[in-house]
Length: 117
Image (cartoon, rainbow, N blue to C red; front, side, top):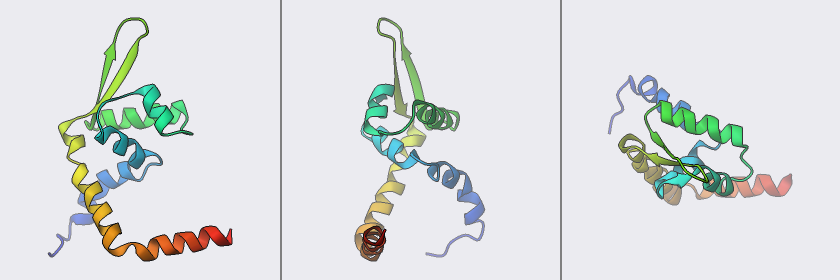
């Protein structure tokens, strides 16, 4: 498959999102269904509340996540992926497949680096 020469510029917006610290793990959590803010904090520990809020707002602003406020006591907020957000799943699946097929040397290098630290 030949890549379109405009590809790097075309995919830059999604790379900016995925390149943010915590973003891959956050999206992975949301692929498994809607989550409350507190659930996400526990799953992504030690993420700070400010960082989690910033990441969720970015995803919401890009149309990848919806935020639903449920009034009552206690008040709670749930986050869900939109159809566009769910559309990112094939990217994650492709990364997983590539890693299974070609990534053994990456895991080996990472282990060697960690052992020498």
